[in-house]
Length: 365
Image (tube, rainbow, N blue to C red; front, top):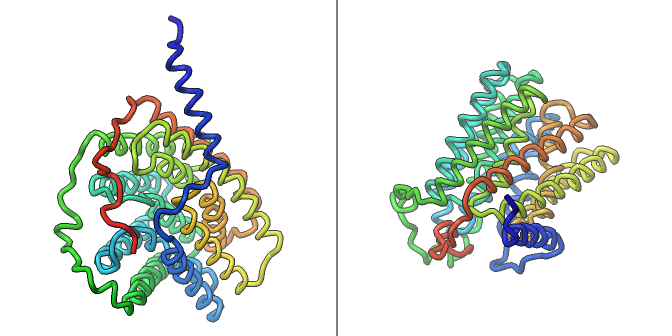
């Protein structure tokens, strides 16, 4: 049977739009520098404290508390403050799971699937928005690597908890401005109202489950079970929080291009071998760039977050400077992104989101 010309034209148009998007920077709807600056500070300070006590590894692990900052960023400050401890508790819980299951490859893989799916249920059911399940997956993988490298699980989990507590504490600083107190925060029963599982949310969850299971199995059988979390992370961020084939293709392309460039940045950092303080400031700068560009150009954000994640994971597990991990991350990213794009293609085209169900409920403050 001959291929439908209209479908072939649609495919070409979609690919063309994805390629063009690499050269397009979306105008900012709201200023991102406040949240970017907060994330950079939350990232940098624990590393500096770790350096001061000659425990750079613990400082880097505590810096993962900065991963809580992007969550609920569109909400008013007081509402954000109510929800951020929940994001921190999720990171601590995933760290505990990774630390306890890390020495057991099969259990670690099963835990990766369980953690990703459970968080995806929360993200898509409660429409929590970006960055989705990405950071809990990275913390889970980092925790497994750190324990395998000899760190005591209790030390690891306590350090992650301290970093998340610091992130919540840093959230209080902007409240010195009177304007943040002029909004009456809604109770948690409203902010986390019972989820509505429409077709879009079900599709996103289904795709996440497929990507997670297949990426984990492929990594265990043909690659390396310890690396499965990176392929899963790459896949779930391409799935994203908004359904649609075009979005998946675009995010997949941006993710791949950004990872390649980000690996180059990581190799540059390794080659320069910066002093610990300079490394801390570099991580803060990368975090700032990530948060400042995430809504405007995804490939640029990925270019910044990739070396940041590689430095934290490799230095925290004692493999900083190992060139082998760069090629592995490229393979893992291609695997996860390809699976995510493929899952978008096997589903029907998403209906228009006229009610903006998946959009943020408030403007950023």
